[in-house]
Image 1 (cartoon, rainbow, N blue to C red):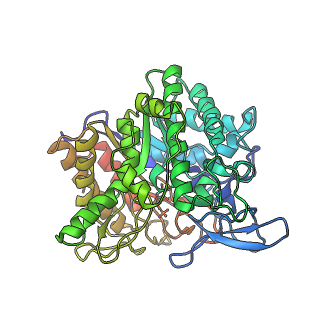
Image 2 (cartoon, rainbow, N blue to C red):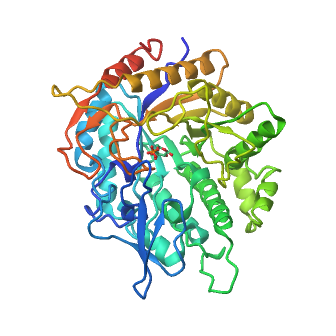
Length: 501
Ligand code: BGP
């Protein structure tokens, strides 16, 4: 049998896309609550205003201008407010997961539900109680909770008052948050992920950054030279890496049996041709992403990090003790998301700072309606690449297909394209385990139940095995329907991955 008997089959989600209940139970406002919906071609936006009432908009991933603050604007739709309402439907949703035989469910904790302002002295008890109920419900159904502490979540107050993750103070606020969770669910949660997709975070949305932040988180005045967006981002991610390492140390004190992971976006990169500049270019580009898992899995910035920093004219600022912390508190497993592969073409170099994806054509691959190349073999490649490099257990915590689904009059949804996508990826994953002997802890496909797309804010870019009746503007009954993929995945889990038909 290919998959071990304790293989963790399940599904994944993120609070900002799934939970809703944005102003209930004492929850505070997060930056993502200010992000409008968008489409494949129209980016999501945040409206921001300065003290004099001047308004600008920024797009996802961009930094906010100095002195501005994001705000809600009438007449716009904000998908995170209701999302697909896990907040009020968690019992039904967990029952559906149990019906599919889920061994695990990956959820993230909304920072502002637990610490409404991010810098509060005490947590919001109502927020913690909500998650108590969710975790107890999972356990009652024999489902192991897999908890992401931070998934694209930035308390608005921490962005406005402190300048977001450019400011080292955020490390302490994060640790207060993480410690509260570790202590609260010390005996209930074993698997933790400290930060989601640490390598692709950036801008105001996920890091709370202004374009002229100084490294200490204060803002530079006009005339001074700011660090530049790439520099602020790299320095902020350094703070997150230190926060994650310190969280590992604290967690191990609280319960030495915890299994601690960090999570990176590691969809694969190929050279577009065998031209040596494409091959080396792809290799260098891949390192922009692997640099971060090198830190969390090996405990230090790799030698080549300096050349990445040099390319941006960036000088990393470390405090005494940072290097020791990173070295002594590496993660137990590497969790990663895998959706597609990208081809690196020397003639149109991919310029993202930290190895994130940009669509480049690959003539050998079909694409999803959102233009994401479908590459199951790439998953086997990446599993091997990562296991060769780190020799520590891996966990595929996101993999799935965003597609338009049709709800039939009889309540069925025939999503054979999703079944094909998942089946082909699981088959390659099985080969990686069975033939290549990669140590893989589990697979949480994206997503158990339909949720809002992070990238476009659309509802119609659906990933779930369970359909939620909701449209792009938030109209619908929120009623849940089992898709054909629901019954298919149930069989996959029941046979521990040996039957994929
Ligand atoms: C990952 C994120 C998820 C998720 C997924 C799919 O990067 O961790 O939160 O949303 O991508 O992306 P999208 O929702 O943009 O289709």
